Image 1: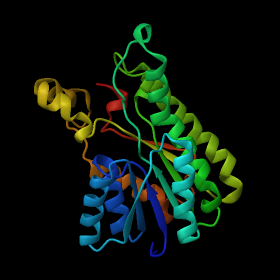
Image 2 (image 1 turned 90 degrees about the vertical axis):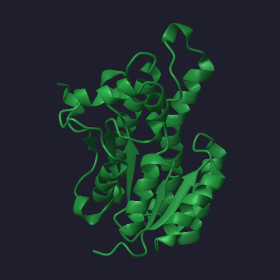
Image 3 (image 1 turned 90 degrees about the horizontal axis):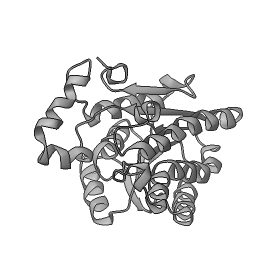
Image 4 (image 1 turned 180 degrees about the vertical axis):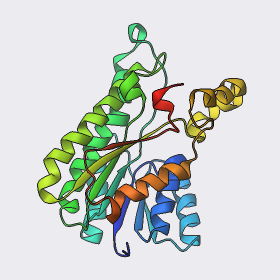
Length: 253
């Protein structure tokens, strides 16, 4: 079934997985609204997508800023009269800190980046999703939401556990409107997210594949393919689910 006329908002869409998700949905026929905080990078991404024949626009706002989210999402919803798909891709590790040394500011920053952002964007989009076609929300959690993260990533794991729970809670809350809510849980994906360790400790980066059953890192396009499925008609009876995209990494070997 054609996705022409369907509107997809992808947060954090100016690099890495988010950009590949935007590109995939654009190629699937959606009008894609890219969100980010780096307006120059947003312009570059937009130019690339439009150059490939994708119907897209860029709307810059900080997903951790409640007022900015409300204004940005409302402007999108009012322009198109609806929103069909929201991909809450924005998020991140935010740095590392053990709890004993953790500042309250760091705690709040990481929680805001991952959990507050999902809440703000989803809440602002709901009135427009109610007017959508096969409307749904796709969130991003992580293995860290189950295993509580590695050293210094405990609050990241805590925030992602919150995303796992809010995904199911939103699914319960919105089922009566036919709005589906699911999550993806990417494993170790080869993106700029890991660029620092890739350049400074290449042997550590290379060793990560040893903990993955399929013996390699994932590619952003592989995450985008699952998001494409969850967003579309083929997943019309799928809600409150989290799909692991980690090559079996969650099971350990």
